[in-house]
View 1 (cartoon, rainbow, N blue to C red):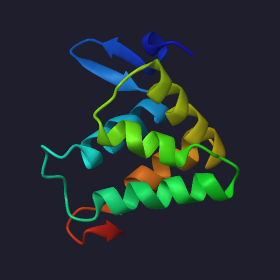
View 2: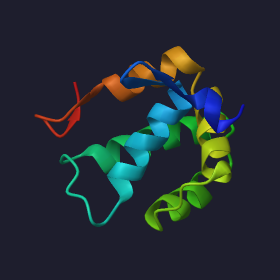
View 3: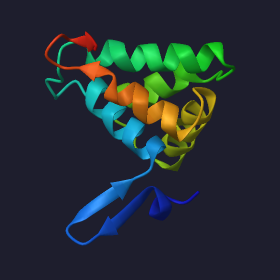
Amino acid sequence: MSARQHFVKKGDHYNLSAPASFLMVAVYAYDPSESAAPGLREHIDVILARATRAGFGQADILVTMLSKGEQSARTMQLACDVTYSVGGDGAMIAMIQDFNPKKGGVR
């Protein structure tokens, strides 16, 4: 899937695929220059752990890339692999939405 399919402009906003949504949240969570909501990075780690238990074998590589702020076709492909591993688009969106920024963790 190309980047064009992950970020689709609709009028004055963009529709994002589930992997693109995950990648945007993960990049934000791991960016040292941002002050992400408490617990967001840990929440991304929970998603990655679930993907790892399901067979995703590159979580540490993705975390390294995120920590360096890398946004590339490779990080997008890894986000797609994570999404597939956790059960697909619906499962990924549900996991992203399960974060509660007021509590610093899962709802």
